Amino acid sequence: MNENNPHDLRARTKAFSLRIIRLYASLPKTTEAQVIGKQTLRSGTSVGAHYHEARRARSTPEFVSKIEGGLQELEETIYWLDLLADSGIVPAARLADLQKEAEELTAILVSSVKTAKLRK
Image (cartoon, rainbow, N blue to C red; front, side, top):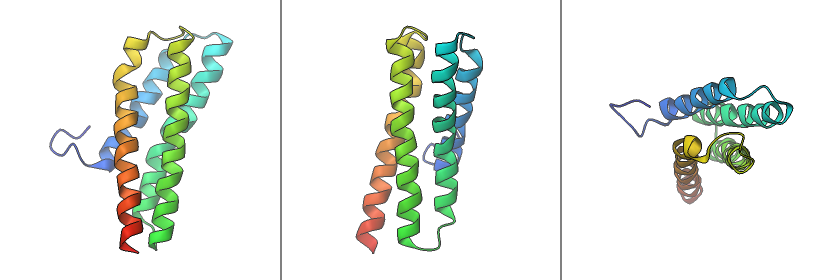
């Protein structure tokens, strides 16, 4: 995360994606770990892509749509992280900070959607 501006979502979503990539790379090579890991990798790295697309939106509805897409990916990522922890593939303590960041990003994006909808 950008230490100078912890609210810079571009940097924050990119840092989140990089953490997801590192998590995937460290997973055991068992079938179940790899299947859940690939789902986590796909959804976790999509969050930043949706945010980047939203920044280039041509309208408020397009912005809201892109941010809501990012929210869907965050919800999916949270689910996969929970499965990794609950299945014992990854110790829950190791995922706690990543799960916390996913929840914080969710709260920020929900707030962004609400604000954008009020500005219509």
